[in-house]
Image 1 (cartoon, rainbow, N blue to C red):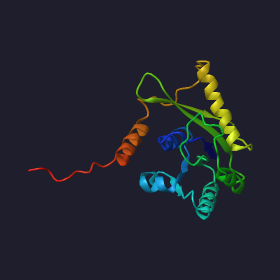
Image 2: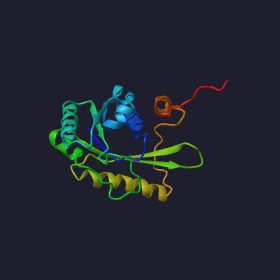
Image 3: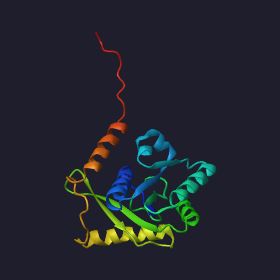
Image 4: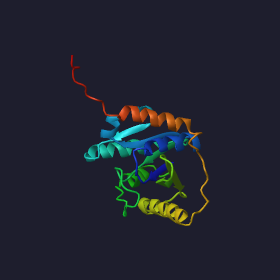
Length: 196
């Protein structure tokens, strides 16, 4: 399964892991900006692979690698075709062509559009809304926008149609991942010599 999704938050990578391993129960991989992967090597241990977006050659390599991962069932490859975090309200989304190329190279893979939207309510932590669309052969960007629109309509109508899949209390792996990321990305305090 090739999942194409919008990219709005630093935490999206943890969402990929949570959905891939707990909901879909698949061997999960995600394409990630090489600079971020270098800064956060933890993600390589859990299925992320890098792409240098400024290099056409490396982009082609990453596309071929992603397609090769889709050579058997039980695998999920997640791509954020925007390439960088973008506000959820941005239209057009600005998808690059990498996901379409992967789909072309792996024609047996189903392409599933997924929309992610974080909403801050009364609590300090955000609620995450996820809309998973039907497999599509259509334009990936248009399919993800349709899922974002579904979330928007549901929130406007105060729709109770969302199913709680993970509560904050239940999602231990997400909390552990958040703690690890916070630790790995926290700026190091530079301390000078102590005054005598």
